[in-house]
Length: 172
Image (tube, rainbow, N blue to C red; front, side, top):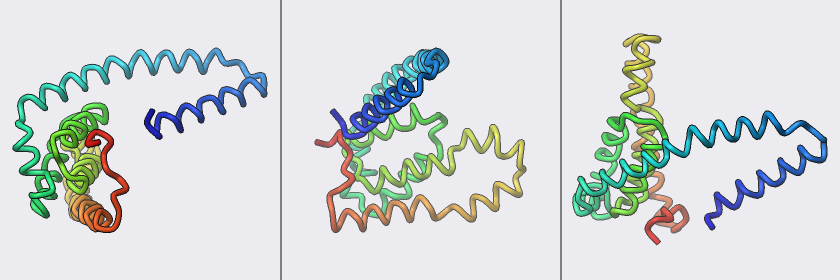
């Protein structure tokens, strides 16, 4: 069992015990859980299937060559560009990151990818940011945050020189 799942399970049990102790009505909580479960599970299944197709479409050698340890600093701009163009929410983006990890991407490249997707996802820029806030705001935000994914990747690279903490679970 992964540490994250273990922590979430313990947290769920503690919250359930607290709700029972306070004699609160659990009906709305259970209803919300079922709604979220019914909405998220199909998305995750589709995302994992899509990630599997991506894994078959992009050769592992290409991913390892562009995002792996041997790519060095060149992996960071490639990862940042990939994070920018992934037009999806977290279910798809993290499934793609898992495919990258399993195909040999380095931890710094994965950090740069996820950070870039978090900050610059193109779908959010075109759907929300430009129409609601305008290109002037977009330009200022991009200029002010441009270095963040690169810095995150470099910091992960430096941290990797002193520790192995942070390796993706899929590589073990």
